[in-house]
Length: 189
Image (tube, rainbow, N blue to C red; front, side):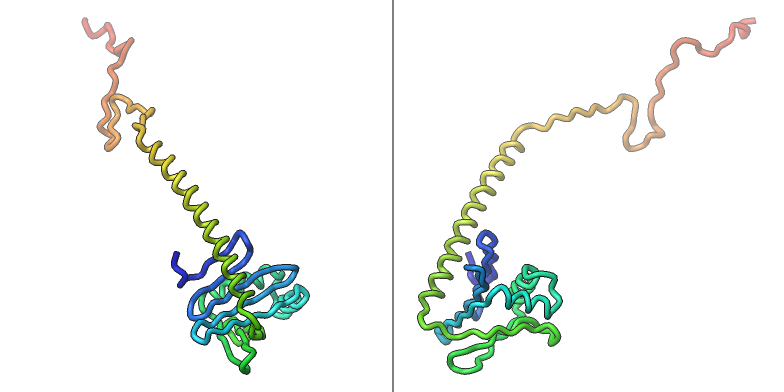
């Protein structure tokens, strides 16, 4: 599994993006948490946002609900439409979106210990790896079942009618008339 692409942790409702930065969204204890890890600087940042804050943010930017706001954040992250700005040595701003009218900024502070970040990331990756293994096994089983069905000969129940040309219906053979031949007996006179 390549870590250079976005991974949607659909079973856990979490999201992780791995690139030059590692960004991890998670929902826990009725709050939204963002983790950011910058490998070049070997620094981790995080922040917790309450549901009330997300509701206000969704209303402010005309999102009908929080789920659409989170989906938009995931899409922006997947497309690389985010920016990490250092405000000082212990805080960074994570800005989502390229359109100035819709740019969301989240303030993150440096984590005291990277254990929380590492534990959360490892749980998410472990869960995703298990989900992918389960998905691959079910796909392999389904593919094996399809291959077994393809091995059976195909029986065509449709029979071609005699006298009909499928390429040119004008060339069809006519059945000989039975019964009256429309020859009158008066012709013998």
